[in-house]
Image 1: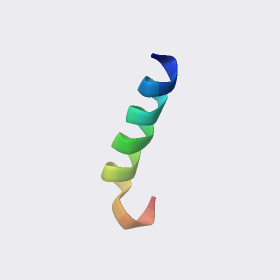
Image 2: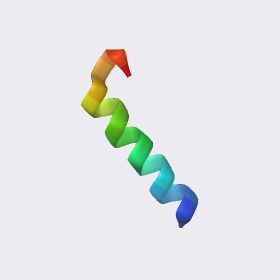
Image 3: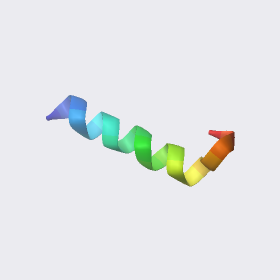
Image 4: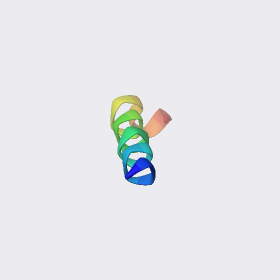
Length: 21
């Protein structure tokens, strides 16, 4: 589960930062 949560967090950051992130 920890890996999944970390992946989701990375996805959220990627969406928030957009192309820059």
